[in-house]
Amino acid sequence: MVDALRLSFVVAGLATVLVGVLGTALGYALAKLRFPGRGFVDALVTLPLVLPPTVVGYYLLALLGRGGWDLLFTPQAAVIAAAIMALPIMVRTARAAIEGVDPVYEQAAYTLGKSPVATFVLVTLPLAWRGLLAGLVLSFARALGEFGATLMVAGNIPGRTQTMPLAIYEATQSGDDALARTLVAVLTLGAFTVLVVVNRLNRGRPW
Image 1 (tube, rainbow, N blue to C red):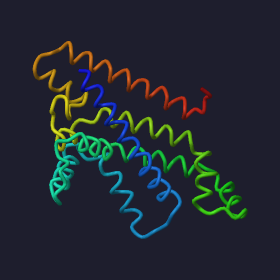
Image 2 (cartoon, one colour):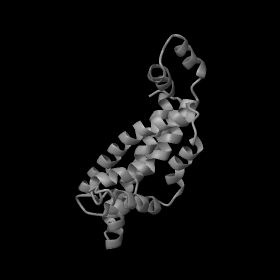
Image 3 (cartoon, rainbow, N blue to C red):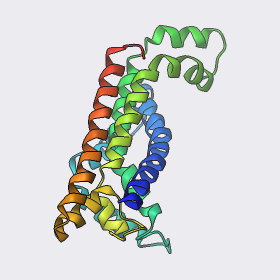
Image 4 (cartoon, rainbow, N blue to C red):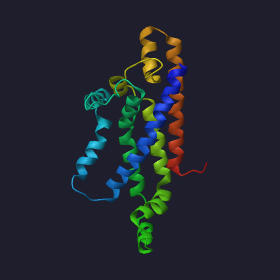
C-alpha cells in the first residue's frame, strides 16, 4: 500500500507539472490566437476526455512501442498516461481562465511596449491565476485516479508501476477487502479535498 501510495503521488505530481506547462500554453493558444487547424487542435486535445481510457491506452501503447523507445511498463509510461488523460482538463480550464481576463489590461501593456510574452507573464498570468490553479488541482486529481490508460502502457507491477487505482483493482480481485477499503478511502478523501479547493478558488474566497 505504501509503495502504491508513494508512486501515485509521484506520478500525479510529475504529470501535473507536464500538464501545467503544456496545458497553459495550449489554453493560451486556443484563447488568444487564430491559426489554421485551430478547431482540429481543440478537438484533438479534448479527445481523451471523451474516449474510454483503454482506447487512449491503446494509442499510447502503439506509439510508445515504436521508434525504439524503451518506456513501456515503466513509471515513465505511467506519467505519460496520466498526463495525457489530465491534459484536456487543464487546457479547458486554462482557456476559460485566460479568456476571462479583460483584454483592456493586455492592450494597455502592449501600448507600454511590452512584448506578448512579457504581457502574458506580467498581466495575463496574475489575473488568471485562480483558474489556472484550479486547473492544476483538478489535473492532479485526475492523474491520481488514472487507471485504464496506465494499465495498458505501464502494467500493474507491484513496487514499480502499481498506482493506487491499480492496487485497489488487485486487492478487490484477490479478496483483500481491508486494503481495498483503505485505498478507496484515501482516494475519496483526496478527491473531496480537491473539490473543496476548486470551489473556493472559483468563488474567489481568500485563504
